[in-house]
Length: 253
Image (cartoon, rainbow, N blue to C red; front, top):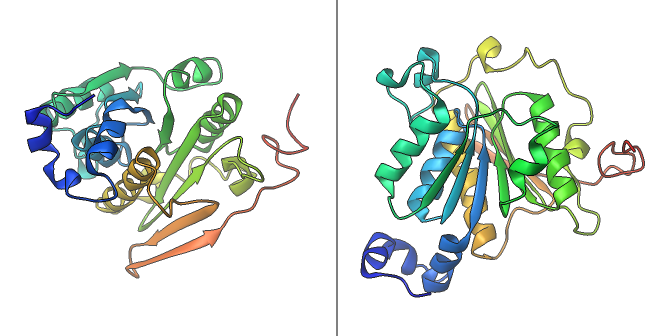
């Protein structure tokens, strides 16, 4: 597969990068990525993956746009209030890049549909605000052996991790968060600085592109933490929990 004249013009800044180049851009075009959650984190993740030329992007979100979303969810406008996020996001993303395929799944991911939703995709990215939903995505990815890029935010901070089921001694999301805190302590209760999901979502998008293009030094068995008030980034080593309820001896049968 060769790049068209329009593709060479569109992706010129990528083609100049030795770490991407023509082969990397072709890999992006062949990739299939599902983004679960089209909210504060999902918007920058989707925007940069679409602009980068990821060939097929799935958007999984059953929610509608609310006025309070517009402070941080930059794919939407005031006229979108009341409309399905996935459909409005698709419209904006195709305006950014009409060369890619965008598929919408206007449902919430749950135990009874998670496996069928993630099955057609290579990489799953979640930017959800509910622990129960994150556990559901994690279990489905573990079952289907799909790489999971997980992003989360709170107030002024955020974090990104990459989980690769099937790798020796690879942790999963449940190893990181073994017991879910109260889901009511989400952004609607605590608040969040509107620019924080932009930073953290961009970091997650970078990790997805690194995975697709097989770049050196991907995020591996580490939690990348962004501290907005301090303007600081740090990494914490992650280890597999032998008693994990998903990937360890404590898993449900």
